[in-house]
Length: 294
Ligand SMILES: N[C@@H](CCC(=O)N[C@@H](CS)C(=O)NCC(=O)O)C(=O)O
Image (cartoon, rainbow, N blue to C red):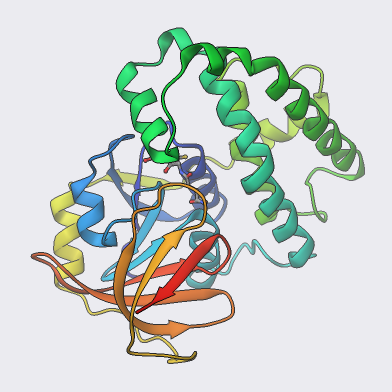
């Protein structure tokens, strides 16, 4: 199998989701650490602008977003499966975690650790959201965030009354998508004791580990892209060959421009020339991304 390269940083929860999946699937992977704030030139030379963590690279293919990365890891390493049982329900639970639960935990983290968070980080995240840093407002929202997290965690606690994992009898994508939010909440200082089944489940998922990780330099990852050709993709969709732009729907809105090479119901693939590297394909999920033509 071609080397799996994860561009990520240790404190990144969405990256933790993917690291835990790599552990579940017992995969070997190469780790390129990116900064937690802009600029990220070693990453954006590959993506064409996309800044968020994590990004998976396989040769000259660049996969943006943890949800797409999970699907790709399932394709390259189908066993043990992430999407075997109740896959649609699992994907919906994962989406709830990504778009609701995470966005209660992240402000909880910022607000409850506000005295330890440097100005430069707050300024980066405010710019990413098009707002202004405000330490008082961040601290004041902690009780509201806690109330929302409490309702969500109580639901998860109920789901775990039925078995060791959230959807079905075995671990699935839903477990990993929820896990990174609970991991982040616990690292932010939240005591999980009120949700004992959730606490035990968190330890169960953590026990999968991260797989076999080896650090490589960004230059080595760039060399892998330079010496590889993008993998063939089915040329489906309207307007193939058009110059298009893809942006995230909600934040981290740097546009990636390129030539549309595939537009499926769930994925978008662009071809672009990366400076000093050559042709790469940059892939996005449809869910959560906007495609603009012309
Ligand atoms: N939907 C994206 C969200 C990724 C995301 O928001 N990642 C955070 C870090 S956990 C991020 O990139 N924050 C800004 C940054 O690190 O530059 C995914 O699932 O990968």
